Length: 246
Ligand SMILES: Nc1cc(-c2ccc3ccn(Cc4ccccn4)c3c2)[nH]n1
Image (cartoon, rainbow, N blue to C red):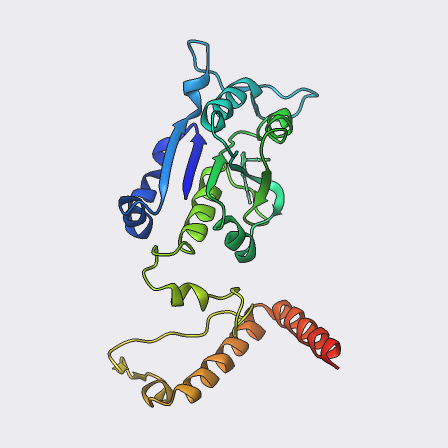
């Protein structure tokens, strides 16, 4: 997968050199390219923002640098990329959206700052490529870089060969499958006894059926405690499946 990131803070993405993603880039699984939006400014101050039409606080990112940056980065290719634009007003980014994004050959991330990007940039880009305006949660960041890092990390770990153990991605919370939409239960490793706490004996029993049942029980308990609304959704879905099979 190719990922292009357009930002006024390229250094923000140094963490993508590390760990799993760094290894995936070295292995050629991921091709991440950073672009400084200011490369496409024409004035000696490299201006990327201006006051909002209609008044109001803060500044808005000017359309011209974005238009030229997206033309350069996405132009000349046979098939256009999917443009991902993190924004507080986007549709929710979920594990299911991450799974779909992980099947794309090429993603371009537009990292806004200030109060956002002139709306004509998305409209113009939408004429040439699919555009996803995405929110990673109901809170307001100072810009799109953190959101882009979250989305890139979530998507990248789903790519074959990145985790090195496809199994662990499949069993994630929110991933389809036996534990669909339940939160992860507790995990343990050696030593079996630590600071007067024992690892639950079932996990040392070698009885895989009992371990699976225990893990599902713990996942249900944690979900009921921390995200009861997910259980309501799960119950409604299972009820629908049962009624359809009747
Ligand atoms: N889930 C999310 C995404 C963001 C996000 C993404 C991109 C930008 C570009 C600018 N800002 C700041 C800002 C402030 C006020 C109104 C609009 N935007 C961003 C915030 N916050 N929370």
